[in-house]
Amino acid sequence: MSLPRIAVDAMGGDEGVRVMVEGAALARRRHDRFKFLLVGDEERIKSALDAHPNLRAASEILHSTDVVAGDEKPTQALRRAKTTSMGMAINAVKQGDAGAAVSAGNTGALMAMSKLALRTMPGIDRPALSAIMPTLGDNDVVMLDLGANTECDARNLVQFAIMGAAYARIITGRDNPRVRLLNIGSEDNKGTEDLQLASAQLKEAAASLAMSFDGYVEADKINRGEVDVVVTDGFSGNIALKGIEGTARFVADLLRRSFASSLRSKFGFLVSRPATELLKHHLDPNNHNGAVFLGLNGVVVKSHGSASAIGVANAVAVTARLLENDLTKRIAADLDRLGGSHLGRTAKAAE
Image 1 (tube, helix red, strand yellow):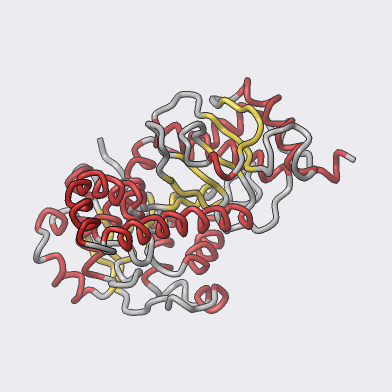
Image 2 (spheres, helix red, strand yellow):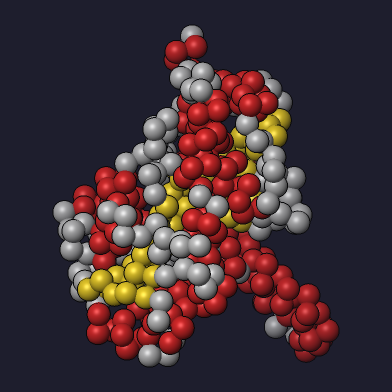
């Protein structure tokens, strides 16, 4: 079976070419049917490929020395979309030269370039940024939006739920992922008018879609393993995500400080080291790397800028799974199944 190749912005991220190429090489060991288009400085990429003959044999290089800076404004980056490694990787998807693009570069620029080049799918008003997070259950949780749209109405939230459920079916393997709206309480009368309207629409539509919807989830339940998809606006989602990440770092640093506080504590660390290593692995963002821009006419995945080669490999692996399972067609099929009847109302329209 011939699969579309993955365009990798080799210049993005904190460490650039070396880590991006090494990550792609690791990912190809798991998805050896895929080929790659490595976009960036040809000389540096060729040098990095010397250590990875398995990737070199499956890759082409698209030369570019122009890089989007980490602090560059999206409007500035858009002017150089045709010459930067990030813009050229996205354009490869637009032109059909690649099925998906992966970048560890500037998030705002990546979103702006992706929206301009690929446009949103029919039936989707705004793309959403979605990521995977660990839980205490046997499932990871998909969360969206995480910052692409700071203000969302009920229509946007319903669309996010449809996209998130399609994504979760691929990632979690659940036929009917459990979808919830993030809210300040679980009662039906809690939250804004848009949240309440979105909840009513999703309850009505869930029978037509492959999802289980039962209202709201509070922020302290996101990682309990009781839900597969958490839907919210980008403002609340970004705050919740950073709060979760900050708490994870706080717990890890607190444990480290406690174990170093005395000789007795150091001995306790040696005894409990297998458990602490498991905790470290579970909380390591590299093991859950790869945020997806859902709702575009093409797959674009954002890797953490500080990701290690293992993190980049996981982002590329996520991309490969989405291509193998044709995420865009799945979302389109769900939108068609719903027929748009539940996608047209907002809180203002309902008044």
